[in-house]
Length: 377
Image (tube, rainbow, N blue to C red; front, side, top):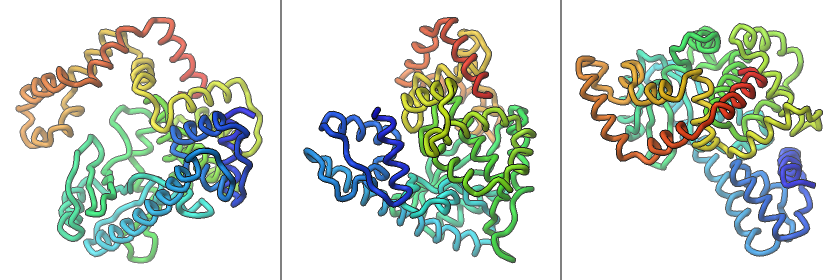
């Protein structure tokens, strides 16, 4: 049995509250552990090997991962509760996203470990929400991105305060995500915490997978989330598929559904499934820098030179969130563009981007574009 098959068997066992037998050799066990670690699945591997005799110091390592997942999830749940109370008191509408919602699908919350809390607010409420959370919960402000703001709780929990789920690229996917609040309703009468309608929750999950996919990989966990969403019944399929068609993600959804079924429900492995599996497993939880550059260049449809220029010369819409002062004083944009260039001169990631872009051959880009077309992107 391959290392990959062992990992998926361990995940299935952990989800069912069962255990598996460890690999026969220390080398095989080490390979399994490293694969689980790259995919942030060591806590599930630990659960599947509970009580099994392991060689070397692997027992201690897995137990540490097991306990860390439980502790981290307890922290996240407690912080989400505090954040919910704070935003309710401030009368600010918000929608919990990602793990905060998907965790309910798992047999035990800690089986869906994550590293942060994602919450969506209206853009008009962003400053009020930030100010209130800093004042009431003693959060500290972190980096601000084009569509979100990072906050840090005193206990170390990272909170991402999103004010949009879409980019302004005009695609059907982002046009639909721009209307996300139309699919949200109060969790309880008079509550400010909102929940997404099932079809939008599902669509957003697929869209989020697609976003990470074209940036180099999304890891195994979103596929497990998808498998659990699929277990909720075929009665929900019609509304879900209607949004997928509207958002231009139907073909991609069919691809990732097939992969999830192959990994977690003994579904058929098609040649495309195998290709996607190799892409996901080689990239780890968030993909690789090399894969990200290759995917971004392929999806841009631009030549090497035009792609590099688009990364060096950002539009106002691309740079204004990096330097918030530009939202009040747009005329400063050229000065901050130059400031950004100087920072790029000393950036390792920028140098890697340059090298990777220059090295990419026409054949490689053509193959990448063909792969993306095949999976529905």
